[in-house]
Length: 160
Image 1 (cartoon, rainbow, N blue to C red):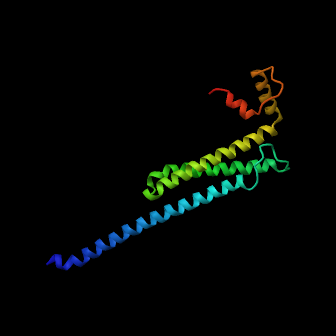
Image 2 (spheres, one colour):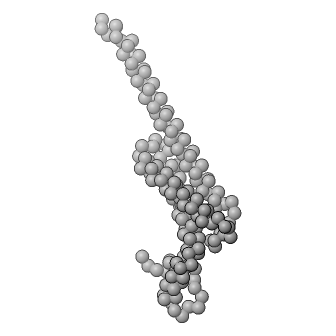
C-alpha cells in the first residue's frame, strides 16, 4: 500500500536526482570546455606577441620601453597565476579535457619563459652598470678574449 502511494514520489525523486546529476556533469564539461577555450585564446595572444613581427633581442628604440617591459611583466605574472591555478585544478577537470588542457599549460609555460628572457635581455641592456658587470665577468672567464660573447651564450657555458 505504501509502495503504491509513494512509488510515484520515489520515481520522481530518482528522476529529478538523475537529472540534477546529468546537469551538473554537463555544467562541468561546459565549464571545462570554456576553460580550454580561454587557455587557447591566451596562448594565441601570447604567440601573437612573437609572430606579429620579429621580436628584437636588442632594446627597441622606443621612449616607452620601460612601460612595454612593465606590461610584459604583468602579462607573464598573470599568465603564471593562470598556469598555477589551472595546474592545481587539473585533477578536477573532466577526463576528456584534462590532457588537452595540460598540454596547453605546457605551451603557455614555454611562452612565458620566452617573454621573460626577452624582458631580461632588454633590462640588462638598459642597465649599463649590470651590462658592464656581466662583461667584466665574461672577460675574467677568458681574459685573452678580445670580443665579448653574447651574455646568454656565456651563461650557457657556466655549469649549474
